[in-house]
Image 1 (cartoon, rainbow, N blue to C red):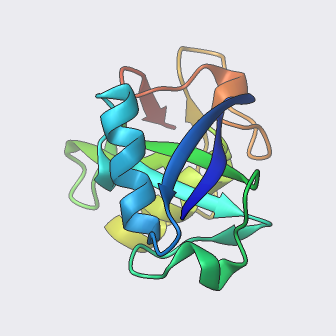
Image 2: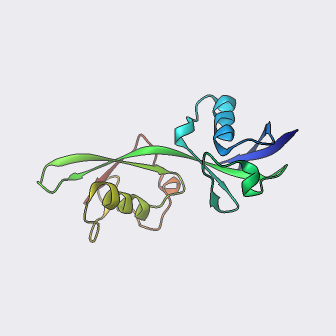
Length: 149
């Protein structure tokens, strides 16, 4: 028996057929085989608002035929700013299109220990990024450099 699900990528649905006992990891590998460029380690899958864990079987999450599973792809954002010693440094943060600018700041704090209290981010002079805006709305991708001001 098989399980037929739809993986949703940027609003487009792609059907994928898997064994009934498939895990989240199996689904990620099937997505990678289907598109040949979404690396498994860069995929995040969501179902009914839950982040799906790799080692769990899909049936545990009550995924059934025709279920829609959201795929988010992580990429690395380069953020350039001064480190505590006053030297310019490039910080790297993993994010996906649905993260917000505030999420980037929180990751800078959590993973790099930066004080984000009065931090502003910008892509070009005089263009401050608003904390509540999504990365996709600012056209931020892996090739985008962001600056701490």
